[in-house]
Length: 276
Image (cartoon, helix red, strand yellow):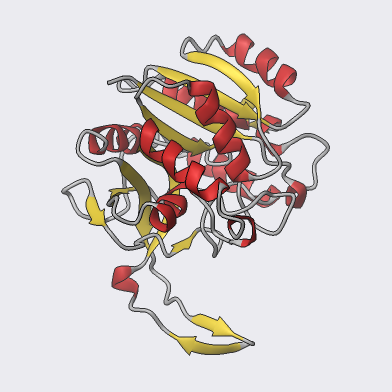
């Protein structure tokens, strides 16, 4: 079955404070966006890449990616105002034919080949998969400035991307979400979260991620990424999770993310930390 990678780069990056969307800023000699596109271009299990760009910046992205000569880029489209809207636009652009689809945040430029391969392989068995790493910190639940709970960290993971799906399954989940008037008010609405809420009978497998797969949210994160890139190729997964490759997540195993809320929750220009 064909596999398409969707690189979500439609966030406005308000918190980054730059004139351009952070996806177009330089990192180690090329645009941030290019690092993710290049990773999928090199992945044997990925057949094509679709880039979802911030409105008004698609032409700039086309110029950048054309210069890079990325052979698997099949299209560049404009995203929406929110992460779910950008995802829906990508789903529509992919058409009706069934395929495996991997949604990845362009703000995670250190994606490694082991993680991509793990997602593609897991989709042979599961209809939905998410990448996650264990949390080494103790996580607490806070209400009104007071701790109200302390979940056992053995059951907690920090979400990363890619998140992978059979196209028909993620399309159905988003159709149900769009029909729900309450959906717009929800936080943590990344794509695995949409599956868990609207298709709860669909198991979401967990693919081990990498601590290197950081998210670029603030300007200082670029310096960290530069150091990690200079340390060598990020070709292996180092999350310390099970060697089995995936684990079944019938309930939400993706309870936290790198930013404290689910990765891809809402738009950078709104209330959350998501890249569209």
